[in-house]
Length: 476
Image (cartoon, rainbow, N blue to C red):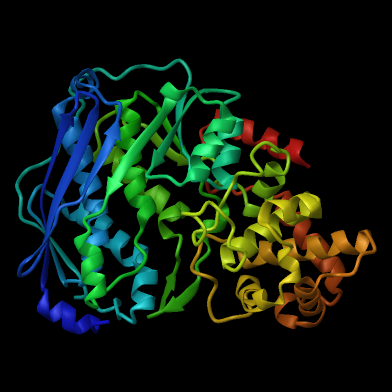
């Protein structure tokens, strides 16, 4: 792989040149972007929102769609900028105020943290990135058409295939008119929607088409790495919800996503930054000032809860359990690979609430019996340099989940499987994991604290708060 400084010197400027959109085949909205890396690399990615007709376009208005699409393009550009980490980003198709420039600069620096860490890029210098707006074209945040007034929330729920969106979907469909939103989604996501019995006309589907040139560049040694994909999905979800007349976008990012993975260049690196409450708050402020008036409210319904609490609620949703998947490695095959941090974490937080036989049937094996997963267990517990760069929970709730799992075996007077036995030894003997002199009682209290906690740093409207608190109480 080429060294980042060499690429930055060779490719000094990344340009967001243009965007376009049009209705194709009378029922699809196709959106395209053109990016350029100096001197002569061009990208032409696109996306298609299905089942959009001209009446929906006319209802929203050209100015509103232009505003949404421009911002989606700003979020998408990280996918291509990352190949060279060019020191200058030029925006040619829309104006960014100084305040808005700071929003996108912060998202780049924090949202690309894992990418900087993995590629050993020092992003802490003041002149690392400069974003320039060359265009005088100001996008309107005024809505030309009258916005529909809903008597009660009409909620669009992005579904990814895991337990979190399953819980959001199952809870919210009991109270509101809901629809689902899939972006080039895995099979597991559609399986969850099928189980939810959401009407087909309320299932919104989007196809995202990356420019294949990015993969050709990767093969040539250009840079690759994680991007803040949830930021892209957020802006795309707002346009989509507005087109289909939804008043709310209820995502399923939990409290756990606020915790970072490692420190690098004196900055906390968080794989899930664009799922964090910090980003959610910044985005809501940005939307209020820059997107069309009456844009849907974007918030995380799961924000008050830890992953462990969501797992407890999910344990009551028996229909969803056989088909949910969170494993990125096994996504294409729609399987749990059984060898990654996502698999071990998902297994560990759900195990205390489901029978061992069910768990083994769902995952294909008892992961607590696989001692090869010990290095991953150490990372999840906080005993290694970094937490896994994956969507996993906090160290504290992982400790609690392992403790609760040990208690399941002890209460049944069953021998601990080899991996869990090793974890149990650490819980009892490693001072790094203990907050008090009496480890077992301490862990019990810590687990209860998590299971009964509520994070007030959230954006839930009051009626959603009441609903979620009731579900949490019912899961105990």
